[in-house]
Length: 147
Image (cartoon, rainbow, N blue to C red; front, side):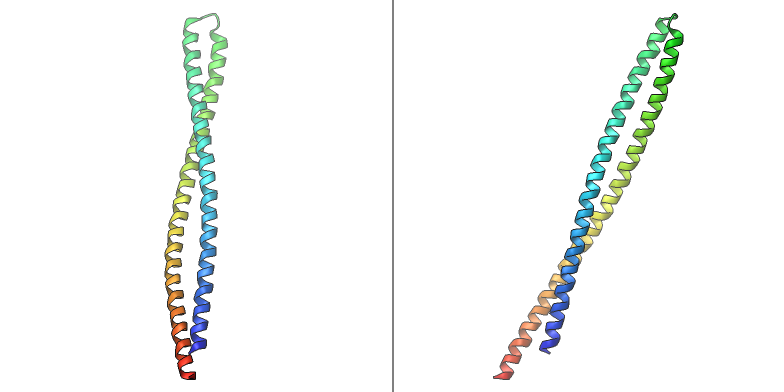
């Protein structure tokens, strides 16, 4: 009975150590995803600023074009380039926003998994405590029987 209690206690402690190891891995993944999410958010903000700058330049170029017939052809070429730059900046912003959303979803999944691991760890710690108590009781009983 003592050996069985010791074996159960050892198994419960090993399972708790394994869960602690998995929780550490998930915490590391969560930190990594948080870093990726922050970097993607910075890229999205930069792309949004680029798009705003391109829009402003496009508006300025359009106003200037209406004022000057002489430079209309040059401004049209500049406007076309700015429209292309704006389209590229908006595409970059869209891609960054999608990446932010995807990383946010991954982070939420990892957080949910970490919560599950924590609940399992708490449960295992209860089992370890019960196994240790059973071991203590069995040891005391064995000691009494030996007397």
